Image (cartoon, rainbow, N blue to C red; front, side, top):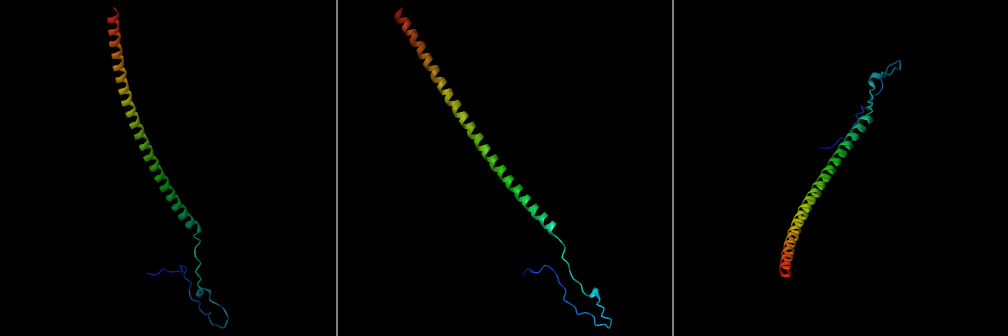
Length: 112
C-alpha cells in the first residue's frame, strides 16, 4: 500500500468560460483551502508527551518501590541477625556469670 504524499486535493484548473461579456463564473473555480489544524496537532503532541511522562513516572515509582522493599528486607534480616548475636552473647555472659559465682563459692569454701 503506497502512502499518499500529497494530503491536500487540488482540483484541476478549468478554462474560463468564453462568453461575450467576459464574465468569469467563479463557481467553476473551486479552490480547496486546508483547515488550520495547528492547535489540534499541538494538542495531540501534548497528549503524547503527557502519556510518555506518566509512563516514565510510573516506571520510576515502581523502581523506587522495589528498591525500598529490598532495603526494608535487608534491614529486617540485619536486625534478625543482630538479635541472634545479642542472644548468643547474653547466653555466654550468663554462663560466665555462673562460672564466676561457682568460683566465688569454691574460693569462700577454701578460705573458711
